[in-house]
Image (cartoon, rainbow, N blue to C red):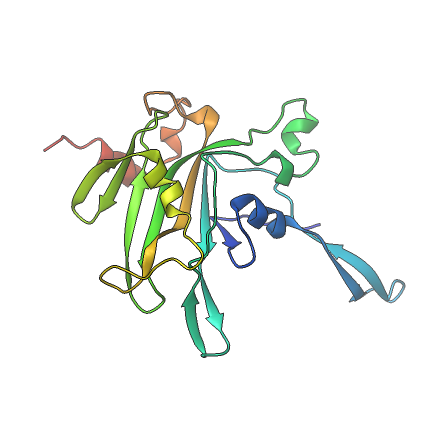
Length: 219
């Protein structure tokens, strides 16, 4: 077994209809026939390889792989296919059976709420990014499009970013409607209903320059 740290998860979109489908593929086991153990006593063996999460971060970033190489054209293409994702996500099924915390009798936190969606409109050659942010636990979403900030409903911020098979081409960049590219999930136990941090030590984990930025006087 080998443990690896990650900053974000890069999840497949091709062949997956939802975030759960993509996560299942991400952790799926594969069988390797004739694996070279590099041990003269064992030789080549049939091995299994897969992934499980041992510990999850306070903020879980998921990059959706909407851009892939197209061998028929020798260039990148954007996947506009429908890809659904939930506002509440439980990662328990994708974690190791017994984590270090559970061994001591405490279950590792695995419940998350969606708080931001970064979307791309356009194709692989050009496009534009917009962000949808929910600052509190209430269903109040805001769209950030350059200097324009507008309030939108959840169906626009979430369901409207799923993409669609055969979506009509429109927009300045000749691309399909906005499609989610990066999802930001925050652990449920770390956010109060007013949007503040439930963990008093959470601020101590942030870089000093970030704290200074958010504590500056309002203009």
